[in-house]
Image (cartoon, rainbow, N blue to C red; front, side, top):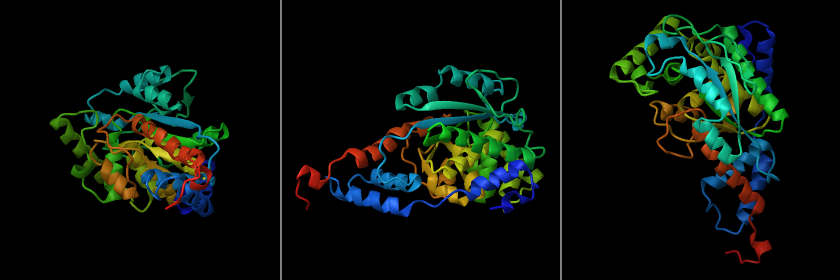
Length: 363
């Protein structure tokens, strides 16, 4: 995958990105076979736990451990960044909401905090590109720049900035893995970020703006028209090269989208599963897989968002969501709800009796 960053020059950040991409390994087939064999020995009809069994087998392949001794330690990484395209009137909320919501996350009062607490997960907030100053003892500052430029009038960021955002995400994942976290969820905060997500999906999916642009925070019909026009103009002005993932990401993306793509690449390089949330997180996963195709098996799709385009992005990745709850909040909320299912899949392998151990006749 060296070709993905070669055009950026032989920079330290580019080398770090390439090294992480190269270090992603294939799933452990032996561990998957062992997990599948144990599932068939458990006191139940073969395959009767459906997708829970499929999840258990894939987790074994990701981690290389057929039967985990304990549940994986969980972290929801919430990347925050602002977007210059908000100047086009694409959101129902002003940009000031981004830092305000980040502080709410840090104070524990947002929906993601509530759901994370219920599942024993830690919320890790990262300022990768919020407009304005942010300070909090629990905030991870990985700022690349104070928000992207207006993609409807030029490139959202430079190629170097996109690489730096990717590497920031990789390093966050690596740091958390070193601290013992083995299961990640991707969350985001950034007013206007469904607009760059729609633009990225339009290019990578070969789709028109009207197919991928949704109402985001709840814009009216006039706002929806402005949003579609902004996406169309951004693609026309920037002429992104679909064959060059970094060109597309830098011209049309967001800093938090690139950061989340980096988290996915970094987690996969450490053999850690990643639960992706809604539309923005899924487009970030698409960016990660464009750069590092080997990352795809490490992804778990949590839910199907109500945001237009999310289902198309999931299909592009070949992923099926675990839940469909009519959600469209973001923050990582849908991903957090899947943590108990992942714990359940591991618990079945670890704790359920076999026919032999229970003294039950096998049909």
